[in-house]
Length: 362
Image (cartoon, rainbow, N blue to C red; front, side, top):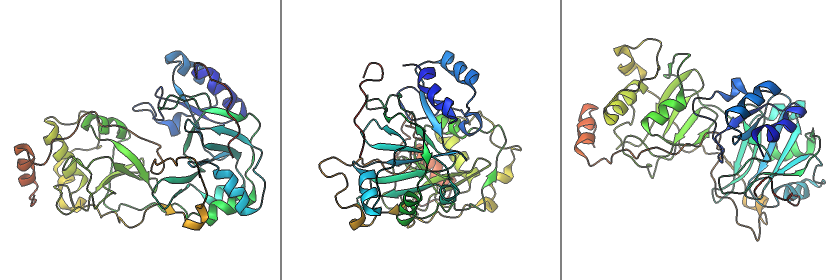
């Protein structure tokens, strides 16, 4: 199947689409999908001409929303708990065999906003994508080699009120943290391109604005006691937080972090970051507040998920993965002379086509 053939049914339903890198869930580098997602057939055809192997992403907007379970029999358990039948709406099966449900928004579902809930053991239970989040479309190829497939190829229905009750019961509203000392960047700034340049992998997103790094660039590994080392990026302003006190980048401003990364890389980032580059960006007034580490995603209570996925391995993927990037290179470890030099600088202490249609998910 081609990008065009996969995307067309969604476009005909009025669901905005955009391309993903082939065989991944990752948007193209430098691609601004919130601005470029479309239902324009001509634009979709142009992306197909560019690369027919692109995967297809569906954008949740004011008209459509998505409920994605990352456990087996997720919807069955939800329906049983709320004493309702499984909703007959457009349904997909993920590459891992879990149910993805597409609905038309209602006033109630819009009010819920984006929500994500983890299982007690840390794996994701479900994710409700209400606005500016995306879902991989059926026909696309999962990184594990399986295809996303249609289970119910029908019109999406309005999201039932009882299902809104279920989502609300087990989750809390997204509560984006402000980063008061973040610095406004140029309109031409490209966050993904800068991460690629420095070889920094982003493994998840918290509260829609904190881009959690795979490894702290200050030390070249993930802090064991500080799992939310992250860049603040809300589309307009850039900040940084690392509260591991032994880290060279603990308490540093975003300007200081970029200076550190340039020194580590051996050359400065060539892209545009600031409208105006001057020394004031390294001033102490740009200190970034710490990101509280004791506020994870909502976690499902034990009794609420008992029996879910029995006999089936639960997907252990953590949280919402809108932008998952693997680093191109591993930063040097903290024992090298270059890092010690930098530490002194910062005054620190140390199926071939689409395959057969899958059976319906429960």
